[in-house]
Image 1 (cartoon, one colour):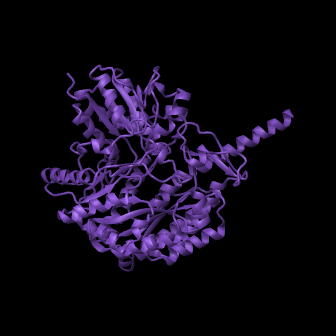
Image 2 (cartoon, rainbow, N blue to C red; image 1 turned 180 degrees about the horizontal axis):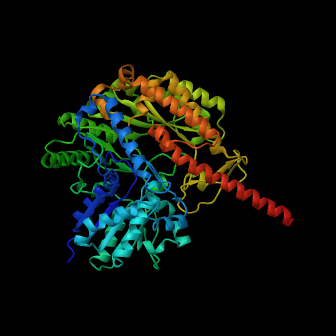
Image 3 (spheres, rainbow, N blue to C red; image 1 turned 90 degrees about the vertical axis):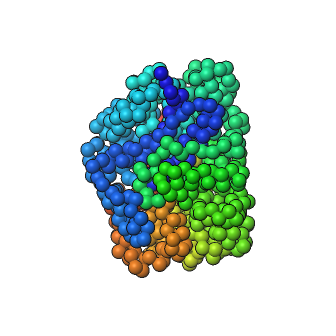
Length: 610
């Protein structure tokens, strides 16, 4: 007899340092509506399974006293992962990335991967996982979350194993990848046997309706749900979930001793969606095209509830929180910070924000710091006003300088995202951006990304040809969310990746503190900032970091040469940020090259026909 209505599962690969926020929020909502659900983070379970027979003293707090010891820990883990991968054909797994012998973006390749034990480690893992966790109490519904492209093959492998062993169980797929790719998934039909329902956009209300239909046999409106052979209503303006309807997220099924991090780091949400409309960004389209916030008093209740849970379960209060928002509102953050300070709650947090004028105010930033803020992550992208205007960032350089200065003065880490290669950008503009970063001591750490045409972004949805930039975009296919494109017939992506390498080395040579901080997992930076201040990169560089930076530069420059010469690359030597970007961009560059080749062949055929 079933005692569980459903099981909800996150799959590899995502950060192994903390869980994602999606499942605890979904479980909390289903629980308050009377359904019994259990959640599993098989991302961390898989990595621990893959690392079996290896002992790492992860919870040793000494790591936080000497940052280089923390670096060494993760380097050791990465080395073991690479050695373990040799048991499988063409497999590469890191702490934040995976590359299999099969493409994750084409449906036929995913279909082949789910049956190939020689290349796919998830087959053995999920059979063992099901024996241990699902067989004792087979639920009627199994939900699988697919947030990132790196999770696609793992997710469909799990669905394949479930379908073979429990054909009567209803399989529900949801998450950003399903929301963004359901059209091509339906058009292909190749993977249709591996799901019963697809959930689009916010998962709470659709998942509740599926439970009411499957468990209670109720007649309910199936909105933003795709049910095979049924014509349900698909309308992203509907069921934009009100975050305040949730009483409290439920983390009780997750064991924080499993995560590869000395501290407990809890994900929360203050908001969903983004109120911006940047030309290159698909975030608004992936979140019901609306921005919604959770009230500050409910966020405080979430923190206090988690602290009560961890005190009872682990003997200590959780202190560190990451708001897993697309962007947080300044007013909500201020309200949360004031409440934390006034009630003397021991909590530090970090989040993603837009460069708003509110953050220019020194008193505002001091209140955020006093209320627990230790790191803010900004989409700086560039310092060129013309490019910012073309991006529709709605920020200006003078305001950026004031914000970064106020944040840094308050003691908070400034983490900036830089985007190179927006169409029309020149080498001169990129060099000026590099100089701006080098000379701006208020920038503590950064990550460099390269321009993509993202599915459902304004630049893709409003695409016309010809256009001022000479862009041509391929139609979306498979699980592609970054679409192959050319600029004036050339592989712009390949050029801009090489430029990103050049700019990165230029910055690191002049600002080794930025290079040093970039070596650490993102989650560790804010916590180290809380202990040692936002200038810890400069402080520890002189004592511990020179050899690390030297190795970073040598490995990076060697990688750049190998990349340019199309030589084999030894990924195990690369620092994690470069490794992750390599995995992503090499796939994209190949797709663009194939698209250009196909287009040339098509043009040749047309010429012959004429």
